Length: 113
Length: 112
Image (tube, rainbow over the protein chains, first blue to last red):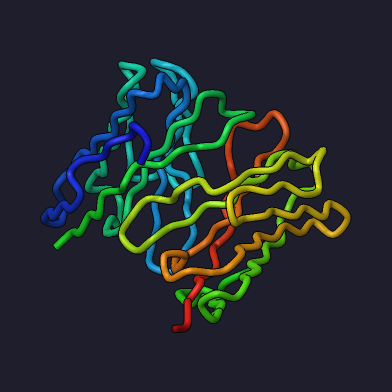
């Protein structure tokens, strides 16, 4: 998992509650990413950030929000507006978003009851 | 390979044989390609990458081949071991873009 940590590993929430997933990296990477993965599916990009205090929507940003106040941290909030939040959430980082590979954290499995 | 719905394409290989996992990528302008391995319940791990100015790159027990003419990428794993059992994703990065596009993955199943 190479210096990227996500917490918690498993998270249970009631429907209608907001929940925040943590992602921290000590790799001194500029870019960070959040993906969602559903069973048997590939990765879909939620949000990404190339630099502190800046972030862009990915392909499925609706119902999610992020912040990038520090280079090391990129928390993801799953809001009550997200219609189907139960999924495996993966955070990644890269040194240079246009030329370097992304390295992934261990993931957080969110289950909404 | 491509998947439909919840069913990933699966490749079953005898332990000790070589595995070849294929991927068709979408954009002829992509110039950087990566293979990831994802074990159950874990995040994807980087395996090997290749840039578009190359057609072959070798790592430890793995080789990636790139055929830009037909937009095809393959991952060869030599002497497949039980620990190679996982889902393998290819990914492409469009030149000067800041996003990576992931394929849907292929499940590698090792037969004893």
